[in-house]
Image 1: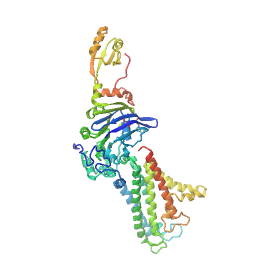
Image 2: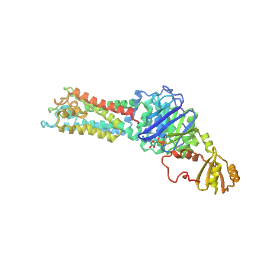
Image 3: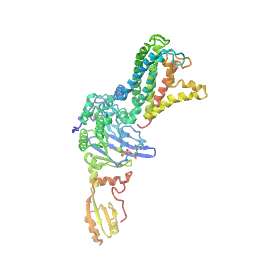
Length: 277
Length: 311
Ligand SMILES: Nc1ncnc2c1ncn2[C@@H]1O[C@H](COP(=O)(O)OP(=O)(O)O)[C@@H](O)[C@H]1O
Ligand SMILES: [Mg+2]
């Protein structure tokens, strides 16, 4: 490496105290949002994961559409649920990627740089949640809007044929994207709370996938009712044009998911404020 | 812009990493933060920028807690000891992410990359960087917002001799520009070359708050090595205010506070035979070792000064 010269003062102006920024420098919410946006897209794992979400959703949607036979009652019989089956992969990949955006900061040590730049800390959490939530929402909505007509092209003469204008369809596509974004942000929160990628993925799989499957074996009716309101279970009514009547209503499902995500963020915020980085 | 540390204490469970530290770091000079490993230097630096919260006491930069400043990076630029970079991100994107939080223009990012000599590697993933390149990236991050103060934790770690020289020049130049420069090291020799002021710590406690010149002066007093078959008696004869007598081996004394001439005269006056009377100066490194001897966490057996035995 060649001998670099020491650094000349930049536009900030040294020793001025930079109160409010002699060079106009200042930490702002838009700045922190831009930073988190840049951080998200400057990692290859983001591109790979999001590409996988789209490919799996579209691919599975087309495959299911092409091979659909009206075989009677056991499979899903909802025009949106069937065509968007592949979007379920997104419900796993997105929260894991969300976990990486936060827990990954601790595993690499990046968090020390991040929190030295934004020592109030909470704006970082909100920005990560906002950026990743928005990206997840847009990606899932776009993927749903692309997958649905593609898969439906194969289903013209079946009982689950439907168009975007049919009752419940547009709403189901929209609530799928909203629900997926909420689960993605829950991942962001869990990663910031536990600060470890394996622990966060373990907690996510355990609490949201294993427990809801095992708990209903308990001989209490209310447990089964409660499980329907855990985030992944609550996705069911959101992803159907005509949700089964025994499921929570769309509004109730959305509210319960929002509560889970808000609770996760609140816990993460508390830990972020209280403990050393 | 000053960094004021007041009664700063940090405990991790039972372990007290920083113990009631009080000192001030002033602008315009390089202040060395010196202490053996485990003395609490890195912890103090994390406390300065609020990554860790003090158990008690406080630290302010430019009169306020670091986090209360509208542009913290423009107040204090920090190079921490532990790696603080996402391994999957390029050097440029890493610095850009920090710059965006403060509204620092992209041009400034390119400028600091150039200044630390990373231009050729700016688009490469930081995970593949050598220790030296990692240090340069950390220094680029510290300089990014053109800060009024820099806090650098063992910046010469992992740098080649040319890099070490560059750091020394950089630190002096930053100080000459009127900035506050606070830099840690566990090597007295390194600090003697770069620092003007010294804050010396051991086991989390303040051992000295001085200048290098003053430290050299106080450390530089002569020590006289005396060998005599009546060392015990000579020791008693020499005893007095300001006189320190130590012994490494039977019959051998190390005397401070009295010159060789006076020792010889005293010995002659009392008929004490002398086999050896050798004055020598204590090196800076020895003086530092002496000061921190009781504060070193783990003594390497056989290394450093031998244990004292009675004369
Ligand atoms: N996060 C931590 N948890 C527990 N102990 C710590 C932590 N950080 C530092 N220590 C302990 O505090 C002491 C001071 O460490 P450190 O500040 O790294 O010293 P230095 O930088 O001077 O070598 C050491 O004994 C170290 O083991
Ligand atoms: Mg250290």
